[in-house]
Amino acid sequence: MVDDEPKSLGRFSVFTYGVGHMLNDITSSCWYTYLLLYFTNIGLSPSNAATVTLTGQFADAFTTIIAGELIDRFGNFKIWHGMGCLLVAVSFTSLFGGCLPCKILGSDSPVVQTTGYCISAVVFCSGWSCTQISHLSMVNGVTLNPTSRVACVSCRNAFTMIASLILYVIAFFVFKKQTSSSQVDIKNQYQSMAYISIFIGAVFVIIFQLGTKEPSLKQESNGKRATASWTYWLKKVLYYQVLSIYVSTRVVTNVSQTFLAVYVMNDLRMSPSSKALIPAIIYLSSFVASVLLQELKWSGERLKAFFSAGGLLWLFCGAAVIFLPINMHAFIYVLSILIGIGNALMMVTAIGMESELVDKDLDGSAFVYGSLGFIDKVLCGVFLYFLESYESADPVPCDPTYPCFSVTRFSLGFIPGISALIGVVVAFFIRFHTPNPKTLTQPFLA
Image (cartoon, rainbow, N blue to C red; front, side, top):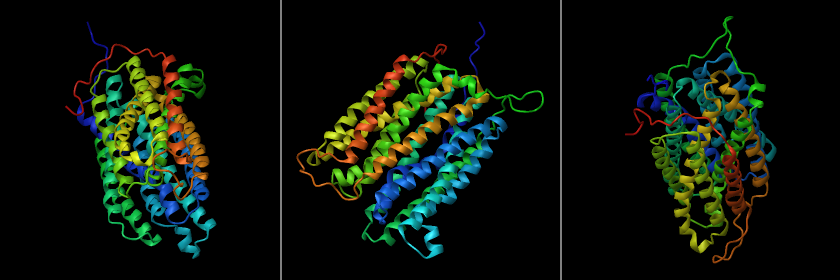
């Protein structure tokens, strides 16, 4: 009997694909974890900081749709990837290194500062989305083997964790040496962190560009790319189900990451180094979970089961975050491990479901990833804008023996917990048509 299963990828191909998002990952970890804290430390009001975040999220969202459509029409995944990485590298240092228009105009007024940071955010997020969509949509062209696709996604997610760990190691030593709270010293700290992050990310961009082949996709007889129309996807019930799951997963990870450092400092009253150590524990546990996940056999039903496990785990963690008092702040270390596992379970399986949705319809893959990313970024941007607008720059007075309500606790516990629950409910009703699962012939990490 002839095995019709497409050939699986070897570990080198999985590796070179997996490292292609490292620059995006290390910079986005800094964006979500430290941007709000950075802006409030240099004197920007919470509402102005929220405006910068919302502007960046909307630029990210609209660029995602535009880039997805152009990639579907013309291909050239690696060119889009390289162009996006260049924009990210150029804009990231200005975002965390000071307001460029302020220096040009010689003014530090709130309006000029907010405008300057908004410009940097637009450039950064536009480049980030070009890299993200080109990299994500490549996976269905790199391999037709469903297990290899999950292996690529799992490897990508593992290196996301490595990128975040690298950032938090850098941050730990930077913040540990903090001797002054002046704005000049704070800006110098973050700028040093930005330069080191970009250099490390650029190394992995080069590995990806040299080691990954450009996918060859279908062309019509006139030489144009054959693409699936938008209506083809919009008529699929599965599209909306996967959309709900992916968006709920991104709300969980992005909103929780944004408020984690503020929660550790303002709500739990922990040491400055903890705002690097706690996120590092989360990403270390996520990395271990991602490596283990890519060794499993995968089918649609298994994707659903593992996603639901991650969602329920996050529901428990969200409740614990809300009710954790200051005098029990050490328990956050246990929660960090569980949050990391939950993040990995949800993210790896959610992206795996995207691949299941696209399946062999390769020529519309960028639209699928782009449209899902658009909804995710708009929704996350709106959530973050309103939550950050009501955020307090100073710790709320609180009895150490009782949990005190704050916007931070609500944002870190309730919003991700409810989003995870919504994802679990939707996953229960999804029906995939995946053949019998097979393991990766050459696992990435043996």
